[in-house]
Image 1 (cartoon, rainbow, N blue to C red):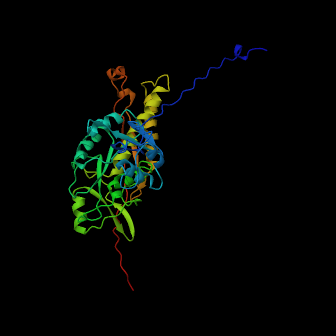
Image 2: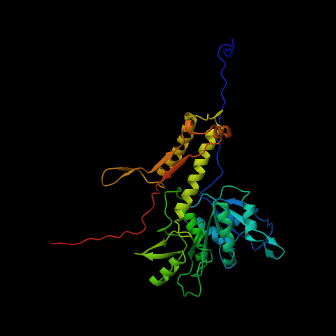
Image 3: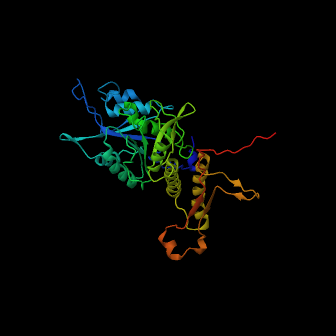
Length: 363
């Protein structure tokens, strides 16, 4: 039988795009290992593990109910009680050094070797350590959520990646439901289930968490301290504010992180999947197209506003992209093979948290 390749020789190169390991929908619970290490057949959990159910967490040794419950066990209950449940959570064990626990930032440094998580949620860690976590998170482009029992924020109010929620049922409460210590875990599980850009962190109902009863003055005090809270309106328990310690909206920070990563990945794939991208207007347009594709996806997710019209019928675009003309780029810049001055502007879609409505009734 004749060999067709003698006439037509076909070689097919499969160019698989790079799949990024970054995640913007998964939390990392950080805390001590199981307290009961004397059970028959006990094996310590991994330094950083992935768990897809509460059973997997308890099978690893953490107790999730009763007087002997471990903080991480209770945090896992808060996470997996939300609807929809998280597909998975990461747990990083704060190891013991002698009789004391290692610095929590040491635990977080170790967890960086395990990609796939985005938001830090402490369990069984003192509020005095929250500032250290917040500083670490700011430098590593993660989020940090925590529950505080104080009306004074334990974290610096200049930080954009940290946010706390008030845990007491009232400012004068002498005891707090154990589950309320993990309100931040429930909040993360609820909101990380949404695509970045499609959500607001306010007005969310959290399973297993008891609401606070607060006066208007107390709410204003928490607002001034940039502490989010969970209260009841019209018979429904909802989160309020949805802000970071610096006053920025949590959803904006998350969407910004997602957009940065998505655009980086699209342009990177363009560069690595082609033999080369020429330093010409045609090549620059290919980069521009990837920027546009990322912004279009951000718009589809709900993070970037749609094109709109003002009262005069003029279009207000959701986003614009500008790139340099190859003819205006110096020979030195071209020789460096670095493309600069690629810029975009996008309007955030934002979210409505409060509606002020005025009306009148007439005869």
